[in-house]
Image (cartoon, rainbow, N blue to C red; front, side, top):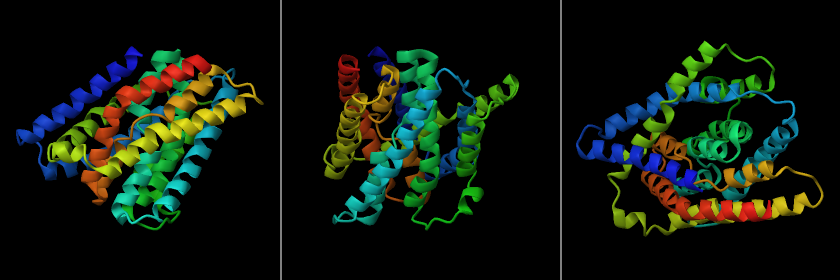
Length: 308
């Protein structure tokens, strides 16, 4: 349980740094845009490629396949339902897009990785990496299409460094070959900038938000409740039902549940800023989910420990 608070503390420090840098005029609107470009076009591809280099364990192949299939079905189904459901409402188009991606795509990297590693060691980290690989494939294709408001064209996968690196990472993960250690370390060195830079950008954007509005935006609350209460509840019920017919290791079920219960991903804010798709609303929603995490993650961890 304490690992959740440690991760939350790290997030708070990075966001607070971005907040202070904006208030002291070290970062302005133009700098936010520049940092977003650097993240999207240089840093993220290294992070994604780095995630493909986790050691492939033959003994863990069933858990890997189960998590991969679950993640693929989860992203495809939840994206479809969110997009279709929101079209029936009177919510503005940009906010619909943010609500769809924020409810579906969580912070699987920065929060998910250390959390699963602390709970289950290297195997937990491996399963989290598999889940995150599917996140990369869906977010940097379908998610970016939703946020950019552009129709999907297969050629776009080859033009986007992030989308292309996601596909390459998935291929590298399933083949037995691994890069030499010095290459892995070099890629990780660049990729490690992802977390602090992205959270600093979020913190900078938060500095322009009215604190009162942060806690009074009903659409943000709806998005966060879907992301951190409704979706994990559905996943939990699903896992209980499936466990009656198939033998699934507790660590595998834990991974599926906790990775689907994480707060909204910071990439929603980065891409909302990049394409000017309600960036302030995206920032409020992500910030609110970070606060909710303090309570919801503890609840789901406790419930899973009792029943899994």
